[in-house]
Length: 348
Figure 1 (cartoon, rainbow, N blue to C red):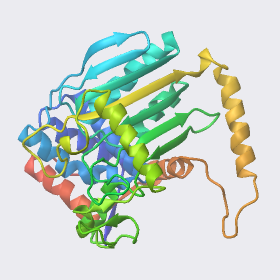
Figure 2 (figure 1 turned 120 degrees about the horizontal axis):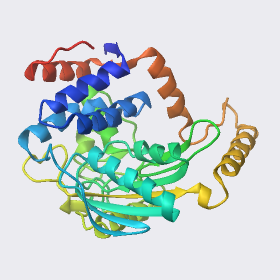
Figure 3 (figure 1 turned 60 degrees about the vertical axis):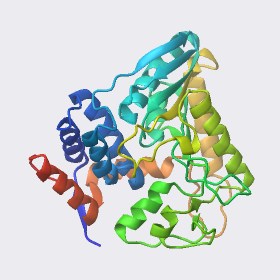
């Protein structure tokens, strides 16, 4: 399949202009575009600009409020309860994590929940914000059902990701993972690109293994570690749905299929100011000691290097900023069609 090498800054500007054409403010559109392009820079294409067509449809139909504003409904020195205003999830996520960082500088730690939100892109984006502020970050979100509780063939929980970050003397350590073996976005992207998927990622609606991503979209994803992954997904529903006052499981409306009802996705955010504990420089030095010790450990046969969480993504990020992002022909054409629809210059 043909690919197109594009400059990441041009790509971000294109996405920003498209969303501004659907009445988003310049600042909010930049936040969303920055999140999406950052996913492509990190190699997480399932959460990148391949979703632009659907985001634009959601804005156009009004199922997402292009001018939605976040409001703080409850607040304490170490907590925030946020109404997302049915804004784009990236706008809600950016607002919540910035507020958490501000409050953590005073209280040492801030935990926030947000409701009435939408799909917020790559969770790693928000914990990176915390790491760059010298803090530990923890973020989670729920999603429409794609994962069955252990012991049932019927999907109920979302592929609810959780992300952690810690600053180091270099690039932050970042873990961004779903309780499923793979995110549904990768199944959808494989279907879009006409590729097969590995057996063991997903079951059909009849409970049978499949390598067909189209069939997989109508089935259920498999959890990591069996009952352990299922249990993690359930607790993410508790934190992001019940505690946040948002939708839960099948009561969250579908991102790809429902263009009439707001999603009411819920998130949580946490920022921990390291300086209130051991001190940031001491922390970074000790983290780097751990990194060096782990990377110096004996390697299994066939392993050339031991990677820290997020290290591969950090390297891709640097390489793609320097050399460009490879967009598949189908995603490139989708962006081109959107630009034509909104009468924007297409210079990717």
